[in-house]
Length: 554
Image (tube, rainbow, N blue to C red):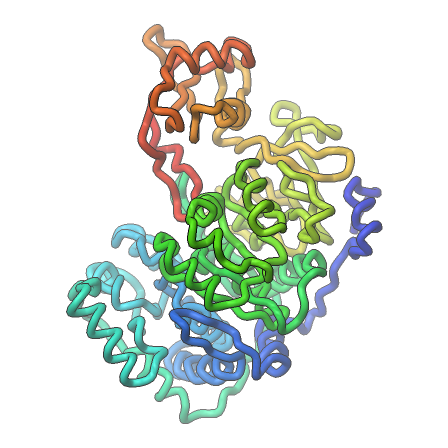
């Protein structure tokens, strides 16, 4: 596969990591799930609100739901999931796959307009939703291709007494279940399971090139695109990540899962990865409630923490968390946005383990590169080295030629995890999928050992007076200022009609002034890179993974 000896092969050899992974043509996610359920049947699989489901229980329930789906829909139909991290969410994913259908994970906080667009685009026939969010769906379901809606409540996974109590409190005391009425066929979660119980599950025939997921991109810079991810793509990424997880033991780990499973990062690292080693996932339904996260650490022996910068920061600022027994933690992994060095340093002091960074994008299922999780063989400030069977080339934005070690350019990726393309989008397919290569749109550089550093995004590069300027270079400089909490740089047109850099700043010190920051910039940046307009703001608009929605800043 590899035409030359790559720089990262040196550390592969040191750690005895294979350069390539193999996938049998007969392997698909259904055969994978069957193997894992048989192997880990009696082990705990999911925990949420102190309720635990074993692999065996999930196996049985998912087969029943799959039977129901196969009775009503055709193999290959698109079935959506519209839920936060409750136990029903991963069970629904497994059930849809076992029915031989495509999973369409959707953010339950989408507006009716966003929901309608995606449901139509993917030609979704059925959707699983949580009653708390059903009102948004009810308002647009007749405008879509939906035939059936399956509704669950928070209490559905509990016994009769607790189920009734939880649902009563949520509906009538806290009143967080808005009224809704569907105009199409609908069933409740427990009825669907009962209807599917009567028939023996017969696994459908699937080839690994079949689409398993239609995963919508976040749409932070443009209209969301549905990425077609195959069974083979997911299997490849599972195997690629597995060779990095050599510090983990089968059947003995517990993953902290606060990130929403409808996002590709959490789907791979917090759903497929624990499933591949018989681990338990402790699901956090609402990560904004810090006490819920602390209780999760207290109730479970968390060994793997998959999170993003705001969550690590939130935990480290909580005195209750700092007093917990954190000795079970083996490593933390951060994604979404770059992790500040002071957060990583504080986390290490508290847990005696490092937080390492990785890199991925939805179009690569999503993992492309990762640091090593043994708390030794990693490089701070980088996103690690490419995964096995992953080719990387870094291309100059102007010339289109490959650049050398230490030089910046657009990263192209080729490997078995790269998706088939976008749904209903031939123009974007032609731009982003070129002769088997995925044009990532990320500006990176590679060091002599193969470790990658993210410099910025092509779409976010600022063209100032004909010069390409990385906003990340400016932001990294200002984020290091002791009086700055966060900063974002964009291009604007000044009063004279000239392109210039504008910097938005969230203060750490309320007394810092624009003049202070202007002077700071003159010490480190040449004139065209220097912010000439500075605006202080209270906070930045962000996605649920902590990415700043730059298009909302003007």
